[in-house]
Image (cartoon, rainbow, N blue to C red; front, side, top):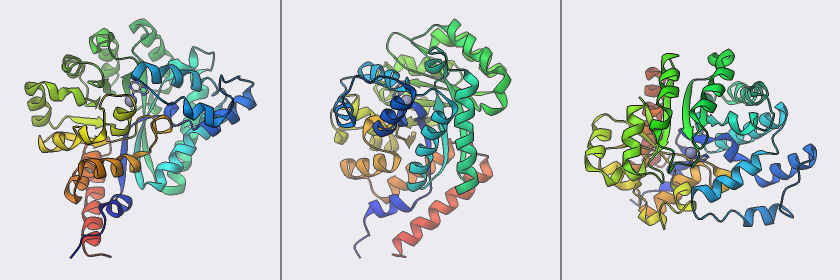
Length: 342
Ligand SMILES: Nc1ncnc2[nH]cnc12
Ligand SMILES: [Zn+2]
């Protein structure tokens, strides 16, 4: 019997998304609409010209555009619309649980109050939960190109809303801004009882992944360059440390030259807890379902690989263990139904 296309399996499986920058979901159409509403001038004639600029040579060339684009987000409703549009799109991909980064420093530096950013995002998360039962967690991510003191000041601003913040992360320009630069800040976050994660090993060397582990992270965001260090791979695999891998992001930012050379399949073979995520889907040409499908084709992933990746996502999530187990059982049931052609 010919197995039905693995793409059909991908489409039907419940999924997580654990590496998603909400500012990176700003589609050009919404960017132009909000620019018009808020009186912001964009240096592009139209949506097509903006999309044509999404031709990145590295992480920094993307970040320059990403921070400029975020400038159109000004009031609570802008953050609501941004977030709800992402959640609606993720729901189409059968994402049942998402853990979302937001970068408050990108907005507070422009005079947008922390409370405005958070209120808009939270209202959308609550609506998605009410409408589809989609669960979520929120991760405040510090910008590593700024100082640790700036991060500390941001943490101070977040203190009144700690109940709404599930964890803390570290993103932006990696090389030259190693995790150890933020040792005291992450210590403080952990002392507040919060989970911490950090981008490491995207463009930065394996040493940055070791440093992220020293910060006490419970997941490494990206981590693809960890494969250059055998001892590190052994440690990550033995501890089932999750890696939130973002294949189309790696392709667009030239971390890999072609998806066929992406290490995702190798990561699974090494026993790493690799997960699939979209990072900044509006800029990188694909949401989480697109990431699965593109990798399936480029790397000839089979049904077992796909199921392993999806299960890793639940294992790596911050859902309670009983809920992880419930979703993993659903994944097995969908796999069986797919195999039986029902
Ligand atoms: N891929 C990425 N790496 C680092 N910082 C980011 N901020 C948004 N996307 C990012
Ligand atoms: Zn990221």
